[in-house]
Length: 185
Image (cartoon, rainbow, N blue to C red; front, side, top):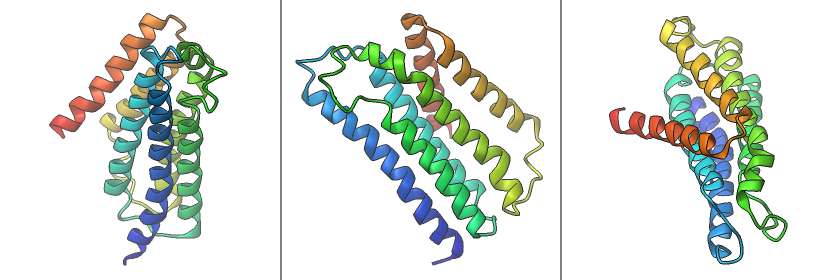
């Protein structure tokens, strides 16, 4: 096993727990769907975060193979994956009796979920490569900065907009972009 494979097994395990947290929450919700009003927002947020984690995971695999594995990289990986796990834990409620309407839960927690996704992405894009000895030749490319700015602007707008119909539209757009990337990429 190479040093990168060792690092990525640790990193991937924690990201995998984030996926398991969301899927477990969705299954818990599905089992209780007769007692609660699920709506569209929470399942769409769950799908959006799952797709973001998947794209992040692939991006990390591609971009991090040349990094020097060190305690610093392990620590940054732990921070990033831990933030994703915390965000994933806030997608669905733990106690379904407390939240009979999941749109209300979404309204209360979406900012924390989206902030976690944004912070994890910002740490990965601004700290991991510079602090871990990775080459920065592609980092200054305009398309990289366009992605960083547009992605975080999208997350900020989604976090701040209160209108539920606009939230559904924005989440549908974000999910569509991830799915389009998956199909084309």
